[in-house]
Length: 185
Image (cartoon, rainbow, N blue to C red; front, top):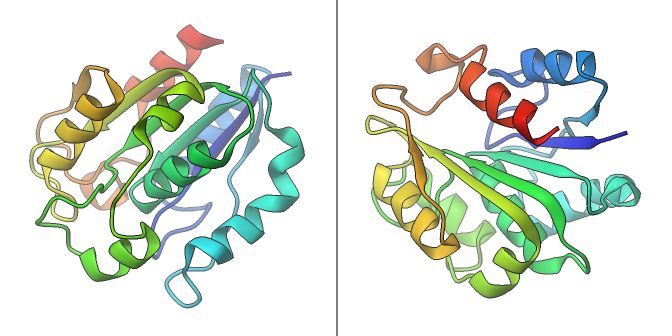
């Protein structure tokens, strides 16, 4: 059984945005889907999120697919730096990597340890990588998605006028992401 993780961002949780819809869609395709609840915004730190993730670590293997939205994408970068073996795929949606403007830059910078990344380790720990971003994201500017895709050696999946690809922007469903995931299954 394929295991898929969806990591939420700051001030969000498992019941936000397109996460519940995607979880149901993927479970209907026979996948086991986890959407861990991380402490946010109170108690939000990389150490705290890694602690929460420990109970799920046993489900990570070469068939796993990991999806990070917003700060969940930052968490995914840090997780890929720490894995012993590669996962099947990693998806980054509206993820900040330190290029201003970022609405919550001060919080993200602490979480991201100054936005320095081991790109080679990250790339080697995901067999396939996808980056999604929009041009009118009010929280994380498009340059973050462009640079992330460049560092990871992949094409950016650009979605015009989609905001932060969250419920606030009308994304309670995310068919384009679901379609790409289904191709991997």
